[in-house]
Image (cartoon, rainbow, N blue to C red; front, top):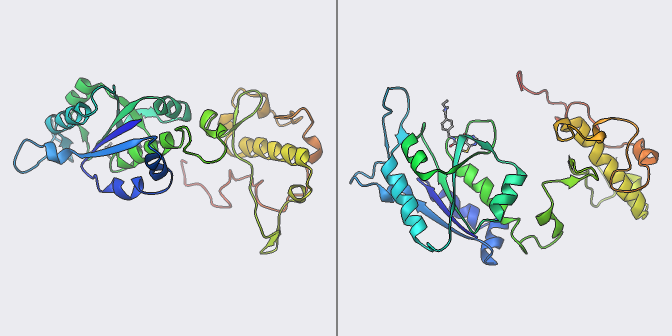
Length: 279
Ligand code: 9D3
């Protein structure tokens, strides 16, 4: 997959693209990533890419011409590869894992990062990008959104994750037998006791089937407590009896096992921190 990023802050991408999963995907040749400085396409000699909004109001608006020319210049490279254009914008469709999976299968992405108050609507109409938001909070520009998207698609390219190849096929989380997305179970490593806290006995039992049942139960109860929206129509939303989840055996016998850690808080995983008003 080829990715072109159009931004007025190309430097933001250098550390990101040379680190961790994106760097591995690039080194393996699974993706290539090319940043383009929109400012380099400004037709005026002051390299101005924004102007005051018609109709008045605060802030500046990104001009059509530099953006359009930057997209055309980027896509004229390797032009046999058809590009899916993506505009990162708070007005966009919320990015979800099914959308990430679709994007990860495209041969080429052109990611357009806005800044300032926004982009002149006419160049959006002309380029017809898919408009994507990464969540309901205010960023100062689209660059972090582009990095989120690149990271999410890079790790889905075949061979990028050294382990658990199934992660590339499935989803952002484990799925129960009825298809509901579940949050992950808690994880532990050495030492067996730390700061007076012990690893749950079941994980030290050597009984792999019992461990699998315990992890399923943890996934289900955590999802109920923290993200009930993920269960919406699933029978797992019903607290009892616990379905057998990914096994054919009842999870009930381990459901009330001793809990020596704080993974069953009733505050939505906030660890005692109250959510701000209106959250
Ligand atoms: C406070 C400014 N807002 C006035 C109502 C509008 C606004 C303009 C530009 C808000 C944010 C931005 C810049 N954000 C992005 O370009 C962006 C973004 C985001 O802010 N949140 C979530 N996802 C994304 S993707 C791109």
